[in-house]
Image (cartoon, rainbow, N blue to C red; front, side, top):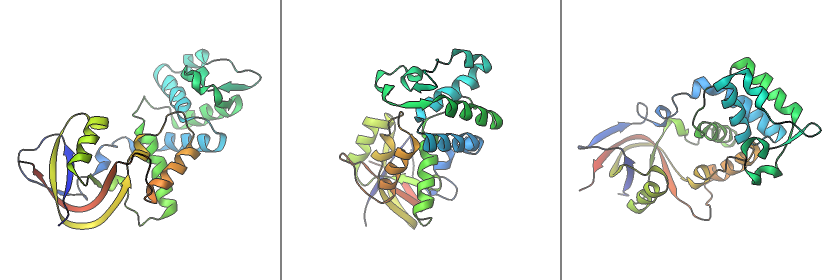
Length: 231
């Protein structure tokens, strides 16, 4: 039987997991609350090419200090901004934003309400889910899944590059409903300054099972499994 592994905070004893009760959705506890904002961000980014990080900054500024933030916005040059005016990153000067599009984003988002600053992975998960639904609804929904690795070495790499803390446990699959192998590098290494259309292209590679230059494969599992502390 093939062995699987997982990085967990800490366990002393064996634990049985049923993914209908314990899954990734607990990490995305604000997803429903943010749905309107995420839809707005994806629309304006995909249709008008506004980088995701600019939309984040504008939302966060308005959510934090309200209308006074509008007075702090940079001035456009003949109705055009470059993204570095917002991000302060010189590399972002290649991204052009029309002033009217940004104003429309602010006015549209104001109707649903600006949200307090939130973790960036919400928008990536939202965009990846859009692509999954377009490609095939038979693919496992990430929010309803449990993520595993195929080796201890992959767990160690994950802890070194991403998680930083935790312990590795062995996983015994007891009942398998879904098992999908994907390169998590595609979702973990998304640069903040790209637009939604670029993310859609990356997500398509992920859901088609393609590999990046330096892949780290995750197993998207749905069913029942048993976590076992390693001796």
